[in-house]
Image 1 (cartoon, rainbow, N blue to C red):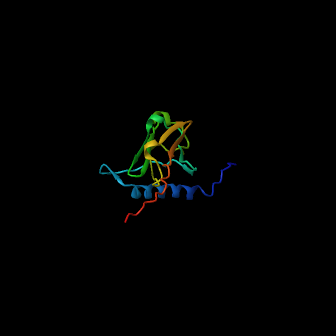
Image 2 (image 1 turned 120 degrees about the vertical axis):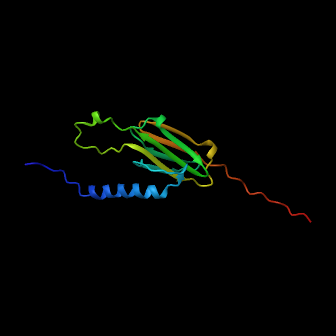
Image 3 (image 1 turned 90 degrees about the horizontal axis):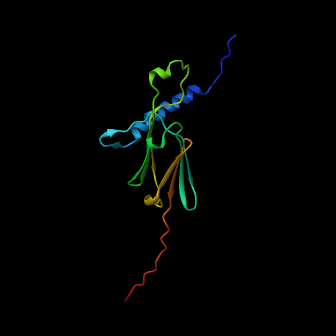
Length: 146
């Protein structure tokens, strides 16, 4: 008797991933005249602290040199690629679930973000982007002269 592992949500999860891909291709802006598409989307956590914002993205198997982080017009873009295995190395696999190929994520930053001091580091497949907040400008009283 064969035992089959029942996964009741696997079909819905697969549909969600496919819809994410379709919607991401429509939502992303054109870059250099070409529509930007991604083969997979890294999961991210975004947290706000009193002095900064922190974005943590899961990018296992992606070399830091393969990751691009750009900031332009208030939009932070993370892109890169997880290299595909050569066909001969894929022989013998019965199941392949880890996505390969390019990824692309964009985040609109609030006006309080300091674009000049953004830093990023990648360690053990986790990309951490730190976005400091700008110092608050104190209101200034202006005297009206007669």
